Image (cartoon, rainbow, N blue to C red; front, top):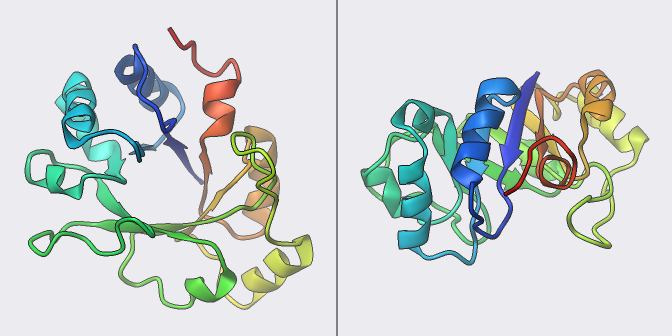
Length: 183
């Protein structure tokens, strides 16, 4: 089961070393998601992360940085629905409904959210019932390419595997628990 982290929306001191620590100890990949940051700010963060980690980073914003760094993938979402025209690397994507899971062939993996009530976004409630998730697994919609996101903590891993998810993505849990010390 893949374990994926997503950065907080805001930049903070010590973030690069925290990302490296999580990749060393816990996570397979980290998504760099900085919706309000400038391209220069995101680039500065990435430059603070040693190059050997770049192949385990997925970039959500400022896809033009893929010309300078060798990322695991670029992430597509409502703000960045298509990759840059010259980009030929791997892609990931955000999905918020089961019908979006029909054709996953262009993607390394996709996020399906919110699975549980969000930890970091107040009022952002689970969008799927247990019965819906079980039926989606039986229909083959949830498979190893689908990563659960939204309110996920390690206590959910066993249940998520039973639904057929290929992994779990965490944001709120990583940055609001004692998982990592923020400076």
